Image (cartoon, rainbow, N blue to C red; front, side):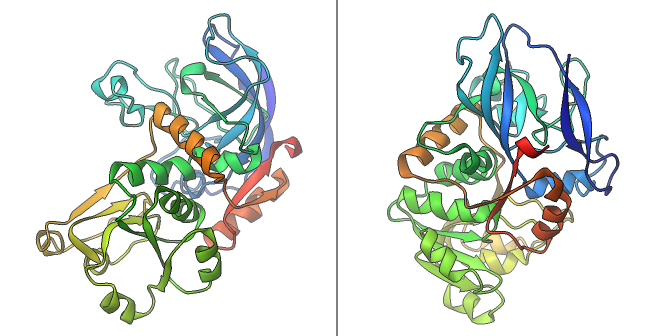
Length: 346
């Protein structure tokens, strides 16, 4: 076992504090990663505050991890000491079900093992990236291309893949009109990726406060959802709306913006249930859908795509002592567009 420093929430809604945790010994197929940077995802806050239900404490959040391999098990074939690597939202799955065999480990029928707030196959709690080091099976580690700096690559391990996967699945590309709902940590990457895929991109945000940023990141159009005229002007406009918002929405209003056969895809997960009038999907043969992260193969594809197109996250680098302040700023939408922890400060 290796003792490492980390930042953990000792209980639900409690401030995170510096502590130490134990990492398992490096097994035959494991790599030990010295974490360099860890992104702060809104889902970290949901889980640390039990917004999505009962959680395990103490909790070390963090599933946007970028670092360097410092030790490799005797059976490791994919990585070597010195490699630049990333770890996302999961660190294991059953590997045998239909979905796992199809490269969809994120939808493992027995449930994947989360990078934190989960139990591994030995029944031990998993701890995430707000820490100095992590031990992960090589099959759940991805390579960060040389063209991506580690700090801007870290958020791609959640925000990047969470937007890339549905954009690819619903065929965003030339000739498609895509709207990204919300211009936050996920939304800004959705804009960049949809633009790089060749789609015509519209941002739908509460206000026009971030319009200049949105256009700079690749949006062709930018509308305020607080303006009722937006819903009149854009009725029936989009092939795909990607919702990154983690607050309840008037789904009926947004479904009206879809073309016939259009899809409204949720990647943001509100803590409260939402309601819908089914005529909003029946009229126009529309789809209301959701999407999780991506599988390991698709996550690697996303990183390679981002490196090819020069896409990293827009980040604000912080020290570990600023994590609690950063949580409050995320909740008040005061970040452009992802906080990243310099783990050397833990």
